[in-house]
Amino acid sequence: MPMSKQTITITQAFRAERRIIVEIDAADHESAIEGFQSGVAEIPGFDDPRWKTEWDLQSEEYK
Image (cartoon, rainbow, N blue to C red):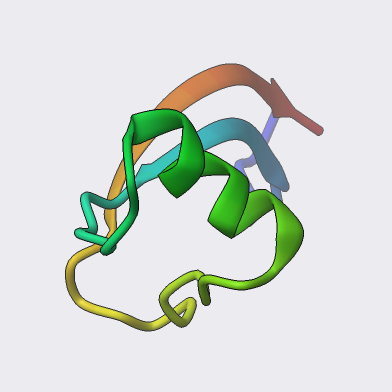
């Protein structure tokens, strides 16, 4: 049987976890967390270079 070009789609599903360490002026650690939860403190922007991202391959499929 002669060979011919075949098109294959590879689908990869990932889980991403992002972490950033920030400093905030607050009375204590719990107050600092509450500041972010209540919106008083602003979470750094998505493209802030301090964010560190870890990627875990969850699955890979070939069609």
